[in-house]
Image (tube, rainbow, N blue to C red; front, side, top):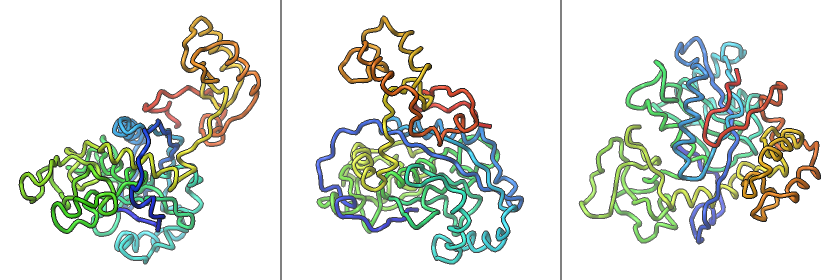
Amino acid sequence: MVFEPELPYEVRAMGYVPSEPEWTEINYVVHVHHTDSFPDSYIPDIVVYDAHDHLNEELEEAMFSFNLLDVIYHDFDEFELAPALLEPYYTCVPYSYMGWAEMNDYVSDLVWDREIIMNVHVFPQFCSGILGFAWTAYAEDTPMEGVWVRTDVFGRTGDHLTHPRDGNKTLIHEVGHYLGLHHVFRNVEFCGQNLGECDESGDYVCDTPPTKINWSCENPICPPGLYDYTPNNHMDYYVDSCRTNFTEGQIERMHAVLPITRPGIASSPYCAGDISGDFVVGMNDLLMMLANIQDLYWEEGDLNGDGVFNIYDLQVVLSNWGNVCYGAELDPFYREERPVLKQERGRSPFPFK
């Protein structure tokens, strides 16, 4: 399910020639909401780390990588209004606003800075069988804004999972919404609708055939040969086993609209001189440069972008010596004064707990 704040036309529709996507890194935190009323709602952090690996695997081709900053557990039973809060949320939201204010109050002091951090909430139950929901753009006045996934469909391992939604594809689907994608069946009443108006209707992506909603891995009931169609898109409602693909147009749209809908998420400032990734320009960076001193084409050391690694790159480190970079206050290792290990793109960080 997706919430769509009112957006400018150029964001809703494609209406442009998209540029070549570039790697985009997104910082995020996972909130695990649990209660004794739902015994399986407390999931171990190893499940979250595996889901993190999978998120990076599925979005790697789309040129997104995700940095998991922390895993935080919230026990409903410790909150004074928990019983009154949970009951309406299970039975109605997000189909009505009953319980909406209470949920916003509940998470307002729990979420991290939503302008620069993607907050992912793992929640025991939603009304009407909803598996998850997300917002397609930043909603300043809505603390709940972010990504929500029902506990029994989050992750790929664990006894809490429900078959056939046990492949973590709900997380991938909702993150797709968060990055600006709509359902491929958006506003489609019949197969092939709006084929000639793809940039102004449907999901605004021209290489996703407008098709009726599909709950299985079979082709929907559409006339044969109407268009090339494979039931594998992440933004339909297939079971997890056949959700495997974002189209080229979807990837272009995500990269094109994200800087408009979530400018803080899409543009984490570059920290000049921080080669080691420990958020501080200093001795670790100098040692890495000395260790690679004979490699003229050491890519990580080419800080000034002239194609070679030399004395001019050392000057970048020295001129920024001692700087504490953007992101240090977000990193759990930094906050707990632990050594920082540089994270390989797309892999789990060293466990926080």
